[in-house]
Length: 211
Image (cartoon, rainbow, N blue to C red; front, side):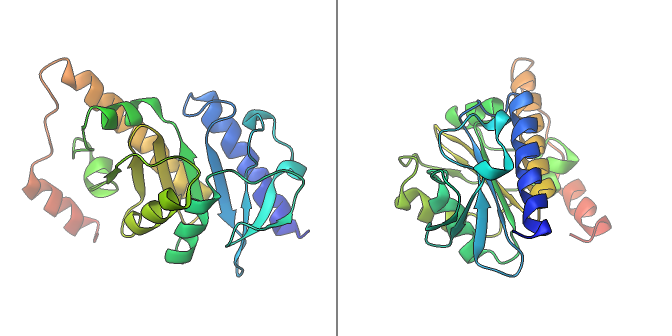
């Protein structure tokens, strides 16, 4: 095992601990993976283990067909959409799936992410909400892989959030921003609804930041 893989395993474990401590996933829910640079191999969290107490040897290495290369446990049951994303997005090296309560709750009510903050307007201008498909299936994997094109995240109806990034930091940042925006929208709903950033201001922001 290379030093790079040791570091990636440590990052995955740190990510799981952080997400769990903030209530973005339960101890056995959620999963994350990273692509090993320059290869078609993926390090992914195992299925069924309590994520905040993962050890480096618990992380599983798989290929793009889900075959286990290294590890004694089964890979996350959601390996289908992890690998589907990596096959379609060469710019993506990390995938995180959480059960973010506010973001998922807003989707359950049919509420899409709207431009209520700078981050929402620029980073998350359009986050698709995908119809429910049974977790851990190839069908769900293919649908996520198709719909993640051009997006930082998708929301799975009745299920949770899938976010991608160049690395784990970028992916977890998207998870955090989505949940923050969803909380703001939830609070605003009880006081008459959220005021959106005007379209002309969004265009100005994009020009200023060259987006």
